[in-house]
Amino acid sequence: MKIPILDLKLQYQQLKSEIDGAIALVLESTQFVLGPEVQKLEQEIANFLGVNHAIGVNSGTDALIIALRALNIGVGDEVITSPFSFYATAESISLVGAKPIFAYIEEDSFNINPESIKEKITPHTKAIMPVHLYGQPAKMAQIRDIAQEYGLKIIEDCAQAFGAIYHGDCLGCGQQCKESQRHDIEGKYVGSIGDVGAFSFYPTKNLGAYGDGGMITTNDDSIAELAKMLRVHGAKKNYHNEMLGYNSRLDSIQATILRVKLKYIRKWNQTRQDIARQYNQLLGNNDAIIVPQFSKGHVFHQYTIRVTNGRRDDLKEYLANKGIGSMIYYPIPQDQLPVYENQYTPHPLTTQLASEVLSLPIYPELPREDIETVADAIIQWTKEING
Ligand SMILES: *Cc1c(COP(=O)(O)O)cnc(C)c1O
Image 1 (tube, helix red, strand yellow):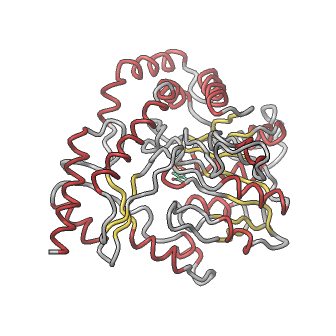
Image 2: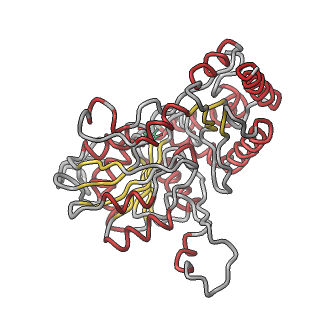
Image 3: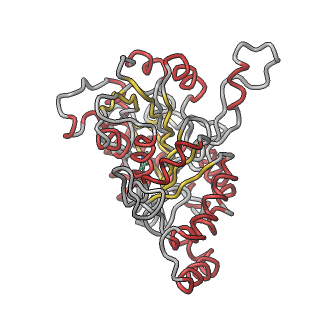
C-alpha cells in the first residue's frame, strides 16, 4: 500500500534515540517484570488521568477480565455492553463466567445507546460495560445516571480511547441547570468516570507499546488492591496465594517505552483530531458516504465513515487498487459471532452499521498530502458511481 491505514515506523524513527536509550537502561537493570519502571508509569498515568490508582497488566483483555473479577462479577451475573466492539469486550465477560447482554448502538456515534441499556436490566444485572469506540467517549452522564438508579457498576472499555475526554451535552449552563449533578464528570478523561477503566497498549492503539500491555484505573482502594492481587496469582505477599488469579504483569521494557510515549500523547491525539477535521471538510456528506461525528473529546483512534447503499466493499476495493489502505472495524457484531450463536436476536441498526463502516488511514505522522489523496480518491469514486 502506498498509503497504509497505519504506519508505526514513522513514529519510531522520530523517537528512536529516546526509546532505544530507555530500553537499554531496562536491559542493564535486569528488572524485566513489574518493578520501578512499571511503578513510575502507573503513577504517571494515574496523574495524567486524574485517578487514584493505575495498575499495569498484560493486555487490555486482561484489564477487562481483572476489572470484572475485582468487582466480584462472575457466574449468574449479567453485564450490559455494546454489541459493536472488538470481541475482547464480550469475551472478557464470558470468561469470568458472567453473561454479556447486548444493548443497541447509536447511529451517530456507534456507541452504546443509554436508552437501550435500561431495557436490558434484569435482577441479574451487575454492571454496564460501555466501550469508547474509535476513541469517542460514550454517553457517560446518562450511563452513570442509570447505574446509580439501578445500583450497577460501570467498567469502561477504554482500549481505543487513551486521552479521550468526556463532554456532556449541557455546556455553559447556569447553576440552576437540572443536569448540574452531571457536571462533575464534564471534561474528565475516560477511565476516570466509571468504577473501573480498562486500557490496552497494543501497538496499534493511540498509546501503543512494542508488545502487549494494559492498565486498570480506579479511584477505589479496595478494587485497586484486588486488581493488584489478581495480576500476580491472587497473592498480596509472594507464595501466600489467597484466590485464583492470573499471571498478568506488565513488563518493564513496555513500561519504559510507554513512559516515553506518554509525554507526546496529548499532542498526538490533537493531531488525530486535526486530521479528522480535515477529512470531514474535504469529504463532507453526500448520498454515498456519511462522515463521522466530530466531538470535542474524541481522540480518533479510528476515522470511520459509513458507506451507504451496500457499496462499502466496492469503495474498499477501489481504494486498495489505488494503493490506499482501509479496514472494517467490525464486520460482525459481537452477538453474531459463533460463540454466541443463536443466543441473541440481531439488532437491525447494529447489523446495518457493521455493513457500512470503513476506517481510513489515520495516525499522527500521516503526511498531510496523503489526507488529500485519500479524500480525492473517495470523491472521485463517488462521482464515478453517480456518473
Ligand atoms: C484492543 C481492544 C481490546 C483488547 O486489548 P488487547 O490489549 O488487545 O487485549 C479490548 N477492547 C477494545 C474495544 C479494543 O479495541
